[in-house]
Length: 498
Ligand SMILES: Cc1cc2nc3c(=O)[nH]c(=O)nc-3n(C[C@H](O)[C@H](O)[C@H](O)COP(=O)(O)OP(=O)(O)OC[C@H]3O[C@@H](n4cnc5c(N)ncnc54)[C@H](O)[C@@H]3O)c2cc1C
Image 1 (spheres, helix red, strand yellow):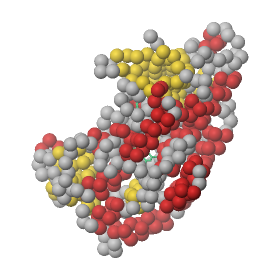
Image 2 (cartoon, rainbow, N blue to C red; image 1 turned 60 degrees about the horizontal axis):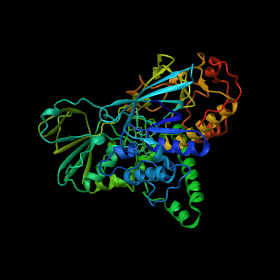
Image 3 (cartoon, protein in one colour; image 1 turned 120 degrees about the vertical axis):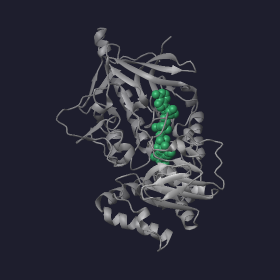
Image 4 (cartoon, protein in one colour; image 1 turned 90 degrees about the horizontal axis):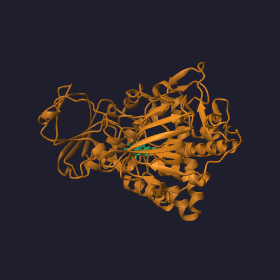
């Protein structure tokens, strides 16, 4: 039997649960289901279980716009974030809409029926469950759940200790009094190192090149003060806006005066580590915000370095050896455990094979419309966050837009909307970061255009104007009712039965 829904959301992570909330609030008569490949709500915050897992942006902007973050810590631990997402799902009955163990594999659009047919592998036998829907909302995240980036190190088989990838942290891993090397210098590495250093004999962060690391207070004093005095939502929105504006200011300042921002960050690091510390370890070759910045709460990483429980080595790995790692400088690092925090493997649209009227969609050949739809692909939106601010800021705006779009189509009797690419609009890479994981994914990511609505501004205030208040019918998004034409029905507003 094929079930039909007005909207199918793929993924029950932070975005999918947020999408469910927005949909049932702003489009209460729309039917929807959330298809989730795993057996749990939470996505990232359920999958990653390494010690110390936490956000690297503040929860006042990583939290939903409709549910205040009530905990004392602004930089929150993974379990608290997971709890927040699950609570949202439970409180609002969104969990009742989730079909777990439904890994979506194919989605085929037919213009004749103006519907998607969605096929998901279900249960241990991977039986195919079939659904149809009018609108597909991909909340499937941005990376491969099956595995992280494999840096293809040589000699791994000769290493006598344990090799661990943070995406699949073994719950039985005992690192107490062990020598640990963490390969990498991204958000995961700077989270792991101070946490492991609490119990390990010694932790070394081995990086190919340095990253900007900035310390922020784990608790936001002003937020906690306001929470005790103001209604929860008012205090939350005030802090959210303060943080949005601050992030926008710092990002813009980094773009306009990179040398000054760089000098400022390095001065802060030097202050934490002392005048004798070799600042080369924390001096990147790129400008601030050419790559995502790493935040550390209450300078925990620097503290562990100061106390000599953690250290940083900048070098390249020649090979794994029986005892640890041999570096290109000739130096050897002995280890009992090596953690390969080498990054994520990006994935677009949850790996779903998407086709439109029998033609397979290659997302790399599409242009991203408003950072959420793809040229030539009808009735499909993907939820993505910002690269220079919290994920949920953009996600909330995307959900608002989807609801406006659905209501607009219903009011006008449209059943299909599709961004039509203008061949005269210049192309640029979709994401403007130089990070390895983004560069590696260039051949799967869509392009962005040089002008609106194809240009990605990575700017909350601009997106708010565009997505919450901008015109739905902007001349680029084409509307029609092909199924009604096929059935010779009048183009007047027609409502599908719920
Ligand atoms: C370790 C780590 C820390 C992070 N910290 C921050 C941070 O501090 N701030 C920030 O802004 N961002 C952060 N991010 C980015 C983070 O992923 C987002 O903040 C956010 O959690 C993404 O939510 P999501 O629901 O869009 O995607 P995900 O959390 O990835 O959830 C996607 C869900 O979709 C499901 N799914 C995927 N494909 C399919 C399919 N084909 N069929 C069915 N189900 C499917 C998955 O199983 C998963 O449950 C972090 C990422 C990582 C990995």
